[in-house]
Image (cartoon, rainbow, N blue to C red; front, side, top):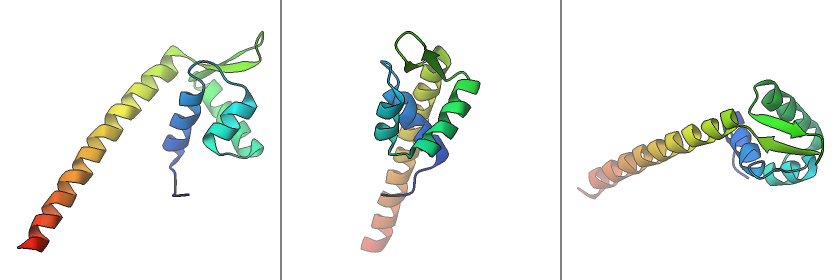
Length: 96
C-alpha cells in the first residue's frame, strides 16, 4: 500500500461515516488498527468533523465534516490536474 497522508486517512474515515458507521466499519474502511482509529476518532470528534450517535452506536459525518470532504475533493482534483500538466510537459520535452 502506498504512503497515505494524515489528510488522506481523515478523508477516508469521513467518507465511511457519511451514512453512519460503527468503529469496526471505519477501521476496515480506512485500513487502520484499533489503536490508530481511536487516535483519529478522538481528533475528528474534537474538531467536530464526526459525531457519535449513542442510540445507534455509530459515528456520523457532521456539516463541518461534509465541508471538509468537499474542499478535500476540490483540492485533490486541482492537484491531479497539475500533475497531469507536468507529466505532459515532461513527455513533450522527452519526445523532441
